Image (tube, rainbow, N blue to C red; front, top):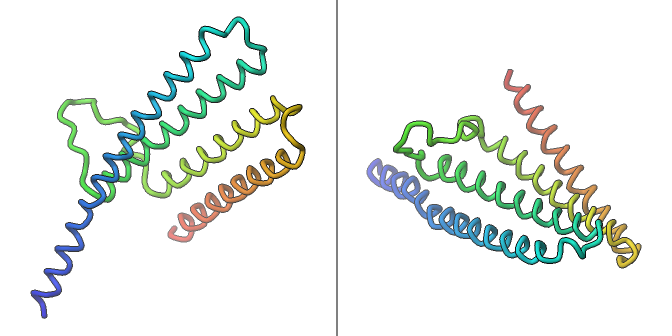
Length: 168
């Protein structure tokens, strides 16, 4: 039975490579977000002098939103690949981002919820900029959703903090 046990462990350990295509698809999604960013910018620039301040702010917030999502995808892709598939093998000195050495899965979870809260806050701010066109009930629902993300983030941070301090 020892050989069967070793075989199962080898297969399970090798199955981590099934995640590699997932991370490649996340990288492709990052490229798509880059395309969308450029599209939003190209659509805004020709009309910038005609836009009201609130419209320009809403467009800028959309670009910030896309940037946050892109950053999040990059972090999840690199940290996930390195933690679950294989260490990243950089060929040139200094090519490895310094932040990658400081991110464990707990830190990635915090960045994930922080990004989600930021994205929800940006969306909520855009709705408040268009308050005259947004029904009050929709605003209340969005505030509640935002607050749910904030509470979830605080609980995750507290859980992570308690887990870290319980080990000490």
